[in-house]
Length: 288
Image (cartoon, rainbow, N blue to C red):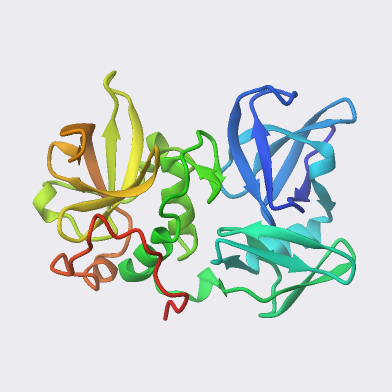
């Protein structure tokens, strides 16, 4: 391709793969309304893309992308809402598309948006992240909506996701853009020197048995963490790492804690506010 051009994801969830075939490793996923730059092609069936949100580069089936103009790309990049319902359709006069939490509604006016010459409506709950103050309480409420979502390496939807996606999507909904993988997320914000100094909404990063930083989660009050291990769950955490009381062992060893939220935002959710580790019930739909 002589120069990059742009496209939008017109389906609920689209795979981004390491190679140009369906058996290739799943690197990530595009959600409805997310934008990409098209940087290469392999025949008529596959496009190599760079994801606008986090710069992940991989291969996507060409039929699962909708080309857009440069002016549409600029407008959609600046003006969008983020879906908060776990799964809710967008509907036109002729069809409907189920879209998951974390999807983007391009140039949404609160009720409808235009894409590919069609008008679509969305009746679920959505937020405009550019209008929100980043608050720990809101971040945690959004992240808890993923509880019990199964683990899927490379996934980014409530039907399957990994720990990096959970952190990325929750922060994105309150207007904070983070990289895709924990190893890159750990470079954001400022370090918290001691475990006892953490605040709810801080991000804890963990290493595997090989010493590789591959896991992340969002810290909750009272020494608990929301993370994705087998599924999205709440576990106990301390200065050693994440402890599983059923297996009676540590699942992950703590490497470092980073504070991405502004200090005043994380103070709004005091550590004395207790969250039960066994409570897997999503919060009420009202966030404000």
